[in-house]
Length: 317
Image (cartoon, rainbow, N blue to C red; front, side, top):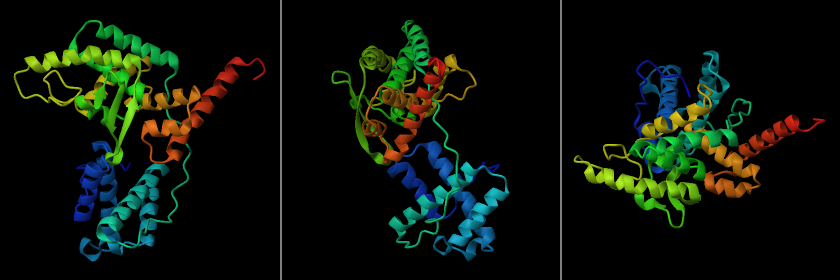
């Protein structure tokens, strides 16, 4: 992601604005992702104003491969990391694919441009002992019977039991979860739905939470969100930021300052399944990845963990 400008302006051209709506409404990307894409596209728009000598002297269909190469060169010259430059080119590719689909643009100038070679970064994963410590802490808080800790334990259970994304957990409705069959219907990226199983611990947490939620909604005088599964103490749907704050408190118990995020639970879910011998394509379906190559990064994590176990335990390692 490119560093934000002082006022963090978005792109001004209508096609770019339409692309932002497409990302949010049709692709179901998170607000964070949409904002990052729009920021990168605004950088490209501003570059084209300079490159072509004024905003009135170019349009998206006139941008060619040479211009995009120059854009990448400028970003590199400014000292941006390779990952940021690669992200900007990836955004340009996606945007021009969108222009082709919606506006009939035949040429994608970003197609064929090579992304900067990046070092593969393995996902950060919690080990079993850390997972156990997190749940012990969350369960101890929930023993108070207070609404917040009971709700937060339920969210934690669903994150680790299903591998859902932050936006997917925040977007769950009551009708999406069946505690009897132990499965949840999730609306992921691109509005694609998938059915996810969850375990007995998540089911037990939901059975405990749902009556508490109903009581809270019943005694709340103001407007409430009757459909949302996870609600605030005021009865409104808990925002992704609210979910993030709740889960971050648990993650801090096993490593303050280590960079663990809510997404670390998703990484841990996938890696622990593969450690136990789960089929890669099954994990792909559970995660909702469109491409198997996206899921394969977890095989590298799993192998890396096995190598560490070997080095630590084998007498002749």
